[in-house]
Image (cartoon, rainbow, N blue to C red; front, top):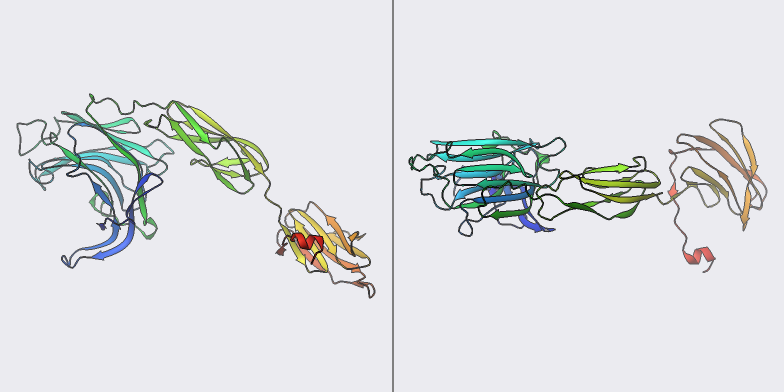
Length: 422
């Protein structure tokens, strides 16, 4: 369902990671009227540039999810001494079905030329809470003369031996067809028979496979590629401040840089102060201090960051006009009257008893009176009595519902306005 391009929209490097992206980019083919591809995508291979015969391949990547999404790293023979596909073999280091993010697979294809070919495959199922897209994972294959083994994050899950594969073209060669130089291929396919021809939905595209590295090692006796243990972890930043309702990204770095399993889990002390997602995203909940801890899955090494949550900046909301009204700051109200010789406030809360108070002069004929610690939904009914200079007058009754009545944010005055200048 895809056509492969060399466009920077489909294959590009960003933040040190190789991105292979599938886009909704339909294309027809005049030379083949029966072919139509709904999507464009990327495919990279090392044919005529790099091959290996035996050794180890590590592929660290974060894979996309969604119906019909088919990311893969695989290997084909540089030449085809035993015949066309799959007589000369295929090694699938990693294939994933995007609609099943909790598992991946590895496989070999062999036997004769299609349709006289066979394949053997094995599946890896991630531990609970991990998926192909929740973080980068290391997919490995160790290829020896008489066997091939597969690992994810250093954990062995599948093995095939030369007692299981064969070549119709070389029946007396027990290692054929996996005794020839193979090259590497990375691609992101859509649809296809790997997952029963399921097509992507509108929300599944675009889809991106992000690749941190592909590393190839010489044959070393097939040692477990998980033998690069984590020795420590650091958090950046180690201390930080975040406002209530805002977020902050923490980044965990494991050591050494080539550790096989870089997975970490996140936790927070003072869960009423802040929360943390399993991607290290901290959200401020209430003023105070909390400690966020990252723990490595390999070795249980820890690092902590001290998070100080501060109140969000107070926003003053005005409900009224230049002469009279109220200003709301958080759960507090400040009633005001400007340009008067005196001012009284008459009010009641939640239909209680009416209170009649003299407002406090603040200078220049301005008066205020506070009402504090309201709760959401509290109803305040009020009116003013004041003398603007031509005699006392009463305003109509007004109604304010806390958390419901809307107003206008106050604009901070400029320096010249505060000083009364100009």
